Length: 451
Ligand SMILES: [Zn+2]
Image (cartoon, rainbow, N blue to C red; front, side, top):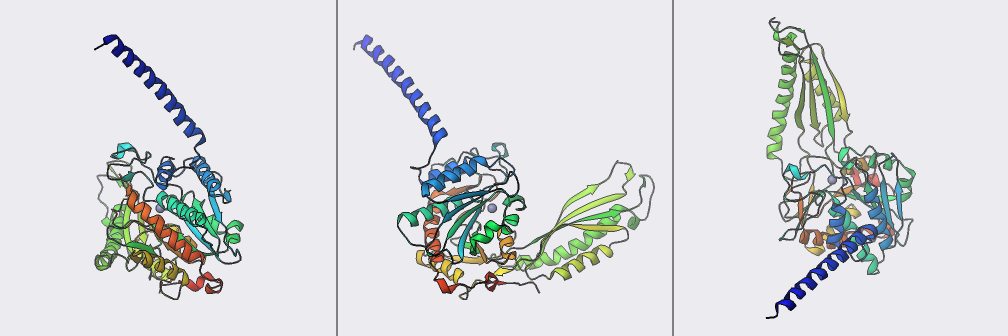
């Protein structure tokens, strides 16, 4: 064995390794600067999107750039509207053959709820790490960056396969769904830009489901939040006033009333089918504030109560019930609404609605089972329905553990890819509903269910 030659070879190898490493570094730096995604697979696109930290209130300009690049790649126009400064709304347009027809609006939100490795994540929540089972971890994999990439990929495939769409299709990307849409969907629905889109149906987010079905949200429960202030005598901690004259005593009465109502509703919730949270009103006392010192009887105790109205609940009757419960709890108790969303109508989910037929026939063709669902919470779609347009919420994640907003939010990439096939069919069907098949007024496909 020639030792000199061997050590020379090792040295050469080491130099080659360093050169390669430097080259690789330059390539990856270049990829960061000029990433154009032209050769990216859908999974790589999702990964790149997850890696942009779009936690609500973060600067979204990187996400906006991402979508601008994808629009260029798809050769479709893109517009960015900033109705409220710092909260961009991105709109991509796939023009159909007849723009006078009602369009299809595919909505998703760019923002995600906060996540940090320290919360107990196995991988960095903004890495889009894919494990050995082909499951991608990351904030937004379920809620709802996956859906945005699915819409986009499906639309690109349709275009590349020269599938004609009769109706315009818009992808809209919102900045602040997770905190109430005050800068996103709510003002957007009142904008000229939205009016010009001439929307016929809006698709929005749904949820993952642990069974082999995809939930389709057709109505949202709305939120009421109230703050109750119980005023009572304040005195030294050694004095002994009547219970019902103290702030805490009054608060006890308020809590008893609301828990009584909660217990009734809980009985209804226990027997409610998993796809219908509309039949009960949830009530949770989420904040109890008050007190100044350990030896002072407080003059004020405040309660914050979160209520999600059953979909058949009459708003006036509910308001009267709240007032009565508080009035019966004692004197000097005041309350105010923090949030009082109006009841939201339901999208009609039967054969009389051609949009519903388009979605269900796509699922049938692919052997996918849909389940019309009223979820316990709410999405941006409630604002759309309130504005008079039918909306359906679905995120194609069957057989998937519910991890929206959770630690280790993740999605199997096979499920993600299947979802693209489903959207391809759904979009093709929706955008090709014949011209004379949809009502001029979207409220024809909505019904108010509150009694
Ligand atoms: Zn969401």
